[in-house]
Image (cartoon, rainbow, N blue to C red; front, top):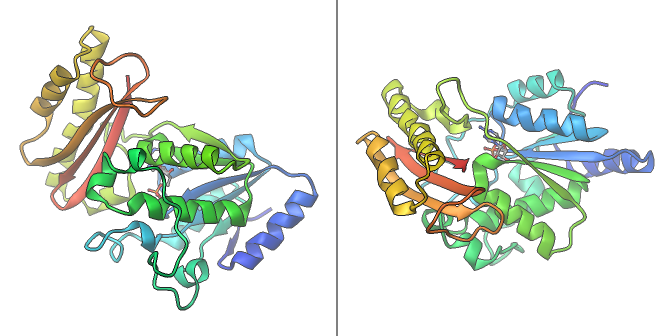
Length: 286
Ligand code: AMP
C-alpha cells in the first residue's frame, strides 16, 4: 500500500474508522515536518509496533510565542511525504491551521478550548522562556489523538519536557493511548538532530557542538562518581563555547520530573541554549 497525503480531518477519520473495523492497531507520530533521521526513528518504531501508521505534519501556530520562528520554520511537505513513503507510512496527515482550529478562530484562549498542563510541569525549563508553549502542544496533541484515535503514540526523548507533559495528560485525562518514548538520534559528531539545525551557520553549528559535548562530559563525570549537581553544572559550563548563550541546565528525575540536587541513575540532565539566534535543546539520561 502506498502512502496517502490527507489534509482534511474528515478524510483521516474515515480511513481510521475502516482500520478500526478491521481490528488494526494504529500508531501516531506527531511532527512539525522537515523530517530527519530523528523523526524516521520514531516512524520505524511505530511500524514495528502497529499495523497502521499515521504521521502528522503540522507547524502548530498555537505553540509558538510571539517573535518565535513560526513563519520561517522549514516546510518541506514533498520531501516529508517521500520519506514517509520510503518508511511505509500509511497516512501523512498535513492539515492547515484553518482545518485544525476553524475558519474564524483567533487562535487564543478567548475563543478556543485549550488544554492546560499542570503548572509544576510548565513553569520551568522550556516553559519559562516559552509561555503558553506547552498549552499549545498539549492542545494540538489531544486534538490529534481525538482525530487519529491511536493505540500508540511515539515521542522523542529529545523533547523531554514535552514527553513528561504528554504522559501526564494521558494519565490525568484517562486516555487509552500508550506513549512510547524514543531515544535521541544524533549526528556522528554528537549534535542532536533537529529541524532547526538548518538555521545554523557553519560557525554556529561548530559552537552548538559544545552542547552535546557538555552533556557527555556530565555523563563521564557521573560515571566517575560525581553526583553533586552544582559541580556537574559548573563542569558543563566550562565546556560550552563562549558564544553559546545558556538558558538552563537542569537535573530532574526521569520518572517523576522532580528536580534533584544529587544525581542518581535515571536522572535527566537537560540543557537549552541559543547558538546565534537559534534556540536548541538537548539532554542525556544518566
Ligand atoms: P518536531 O517535528 O521537532 O516537533 O518533532 C516531532 C517528534 O520527533 C517529537 O516527538 C520529537 O521529540 C522527535 N524528535 C525530534 N528530534 C529528534 C531526535 N534528534 N531524535 C529523536 N526524536 C526526535
